[in-house]
Image (tube, rainbow, N blue to C red; front, side):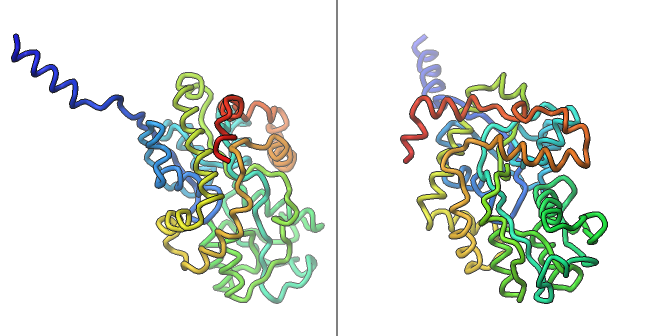
Length: 323
């Protein structure tokens, strides 16, 4: 009897206090920007501290990260407003649970020969996948300049940001939209900014953490802890430059360190102070997408977000405690 008690005691004391919740998160970019808070939450140990064993996996483009969620390959995906709205219009019950960047973080970058919007006519644009944030911004931006993106220019699907920049460098395209990291590299290649969307601070749901309604309902505590880790990551990005650069360097390995440093200093101001997403930005995106996808007119932008988790962190004083 004594021997049996000893065995039970050893087995009990050798077990962890609790098993960490295993999760997968798909992130969509290797550039500094909307995916960065996911990297920080992982590498700085914020997920671990919340009892979450999160495996993060790169999947190029926000429409594809959403597909991992729909297929059950990830419990949370990093995505953007356009992809969420398109998914909702197609009947997928995906919802945003946290926002990272709530403004349009892009620049319209051109070759040195383009000096005005009129010079873009007949030119080739290096574009991302249809339905991505970059594709949406490209089309919104061209229309604002009085150009028809389907008639006045030729938009070619090149892919993620490094590939679009490579296409311009090779002379295969004359313009693109890019973020701060691409801007630093573009300047070194002799390219320039024709339109600065960052300065305009247009509401736009760029980076966001997305899950499905059922998971948010059935795993409420898990999702709350996930959002809490993201809140910590956003605070870290705002306040810990050296630590942030070290983490970014592990993921943006294809980028030169001097470009990464300058881009981080620029993009840091765009990260949200809290993980609250923007309904105004989603409404703005919806009006553009509805012109190509009429089903989006039937989507209530409020239904694309589950704000319970961020609001609980606000009400309990947790977000204020990070300041």
